[in-house]
Image 1 (cartoon, rainbow, N blue to C red):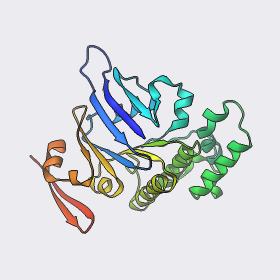
Image 2 (image 1 turned 30 degrees about the vertical axis):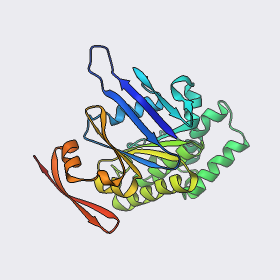
Image 3 (image 1 turned 135 degrees about the horizontal axis):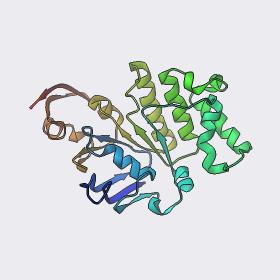
Length: 254
């Protein structure tokens, strides 16, 4: 379980807080979606969870491990990250995925690491791409490599930062299906930021609407109301319920 308690962060003492008392809980195998306008604090929250930035106060725990107090190598065993813009450099797909095991072997990979990479490639349907240059793949294929690199270390939490932003509809669907499988089949918690409210409503179990560095609303799909969306985004929309599905249309500024 991911548990964030009263998290505060500012980039310097002279600047206002970017995170203002964040409280967030995500259970094992749950998919949590961060929602909000650019500048709401989503990326900064990710950075504090990943250990890139150190919070001013508050705590981040994963499975009762206080992440603030562990080494970067240890944290990397608990959390994996899939960025929006995926670049790999001049490495093969196999070697790129192997970088997700560095926190386990340090200098030289062993049989267990090679087996883990092969299993991750097979899981993502990438076995036939192992020797190809990762950076020369299509956008969808790169995202699959990034997910393989994330899961090869057996993380408890995967953070996805706008994962569908550069994908076509077919690859968006593929990524959503893979995220659901990671959560429901393997019990990995997922925290994901999205701009598309319809994608968010389809994918998420729990939703965190952020504004001005705080989580203004947290809960389930009942949060997708016209008033909540107007408060967070400053636009009027229509929220349509079609069976168990939510379809959000419109987007007129106030």
